[in-house]
Length: 153
Image (cartoon, rainbow, N blue to C red; front, side, top):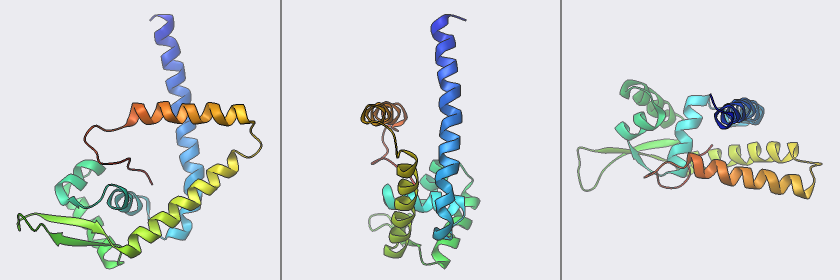
């Protein structure tokens, strides 16, 4: 294995670990949302990527159609999502976030962002600029082709 390959591996290992720790820390702000991880993730897709078919949701969440059906049913029961028949093809059912669901998700995201911003307190302008550039790079590496907007919780 060459030096460049070893460096990529070491950086990848550190990024993986840091991302997990950052997400776990940010998730401590999720208590006010009263949603478990899978429902919050699904509501995030519906809020930031817009209405989706059940099959597309299962694909995006990497779960079975039966699992998506259970999650959508739970979000519907709580008033956070609803199923709507496609106007062009009545066989297709799309799921969309309700106004209540979007508000809940946006409040939850704002709480996570505040928590992460608090972690950045005390950093220098240079350190913040470096993290900003790193975020730019990570966004470009992880952007999904064909996905409308950036899906994030």
